[in-house]
Length: 139
Ligand code: GDP
Image 1 (cartoon, rainbow, N blue to C red):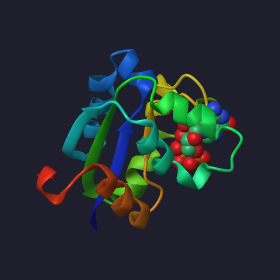
Image 2 (cartoon, rainbow, N blue to C red):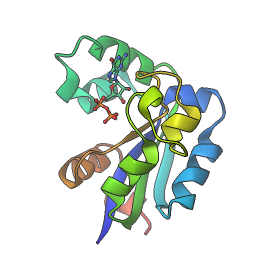
Image 3 (cartoon, protein in one colour):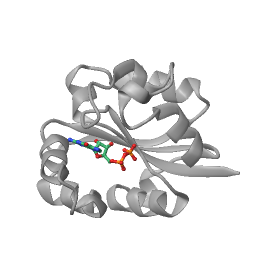
């Protein structure tokens, strides 16, 4: 089934000029980038985005990281896009990520792990709506 998922190329990757390399892995996996914008996340945006982790010990660090440099927010489209992109990203901790995944190739640590991808179709819809309107997405 064709789906859309939400992706973020995180500050550790934009800082190292890896946007194109990450996009190449995404496109080689058959996912289509149907919306994309480079932004500097505000503190309020990052706090809202990671609200589910508010009680975790790393929440403050995570919000500080996500606002530390520009990010690239994206909508990806393709067959089973949500699960497919989770596979392409690899495990949260790059030390556990499979060969060929974005995190294995580029992530620096469990926190600074280069990309975000939605974990369910329901969350994908909510996350896309936080950063894009329907008119921004050209499939
Ligand atoms: P994901 O769905 O694979 O991104 O992983 P989670 O939903 O578990 O965590 C969300 C994000 O929080 C991760 O991608 C990391 O950027 C960050 N994170 C998770 N665990 C840790 C941790 O132990 N320390 C720090 N600093 N950040 C973490």
